[in-house]
Structures are given as C-alpha cells and as structure tokens.
Length: 142
Image (cartoon, rainbow, N blue to C red; front, side):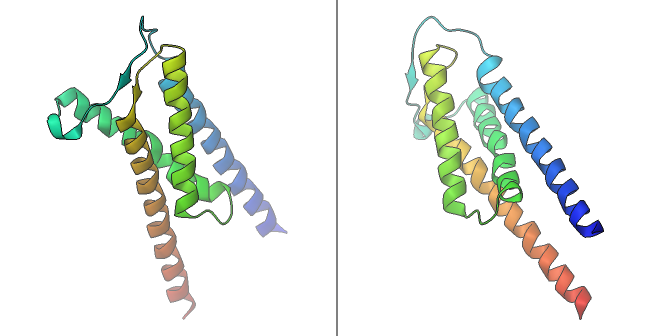
C-alpha cells in the first residue's frame, strides 16, 4: 500500500514539473516576445559564420528542449527516441508557426533543428541515468 502511494506521489510531482516546464516554455517562446512589423522566415546557414548572439540563441534553443526529452519518458510509458524527436519537432514547428502568424518572432529553420537536438540530448540523458540506476539496483541485489 505504501509503495503504491509513493508511486502516485512521484508521478504527481513529475506531472507538476512537466506542467511548469511547458508553461515556462510557452512564456519564453510566445508570451514574452515583442510584436514585429513584418513576417520573416529566417534561413540562416550555419556555414556562413556564427556571431556570438547566434551562438547563445543556438545554445538556448537546445537548452529549452532538454527537459522535454528528459521529462516526457518519466510521464508516459513506452516512449522511444522516434516519439521524442517527433514530439519536439511538432511542438517546435507549432511555436515557429505561431511566431510567424502573430508576428512575435521569426520562423527559423535552425530553431527546429536545435530544439530537436535538445530533445535528443534530454532523452539520451534520461537513458544514461536509467541504465545507471538499473545497473546499480542489480549490483545491490547480488
């Protein structure tokens, strides 16, 4: 009985963290933006040179989706890399479309790539920690 209650509490806490993360993502990507006077689709080539601003923007885009890759398999069962990549791509694409339509940002293809990369890093981190914990549990049982 106690284990079942602990299990529910853990899922509740993870669900709350996931909700806070999604609300924060919504705030930073859509609500905390300046309205632009034109619609713009940015096709910046990574080969043409990267300014410091672009590097920090790239870093933040990757960082923004790491929690999604990490928290999603904690919230839902049987999540695989393909599902995480698809989820990150769809959410990122949705954000970019909303920014374009409501003129609160640019539609940037590089954001899509970086966001999916962030989700992949988060999921890989999840798998590493999960593998380590399983190994540690098995070692303790011996």
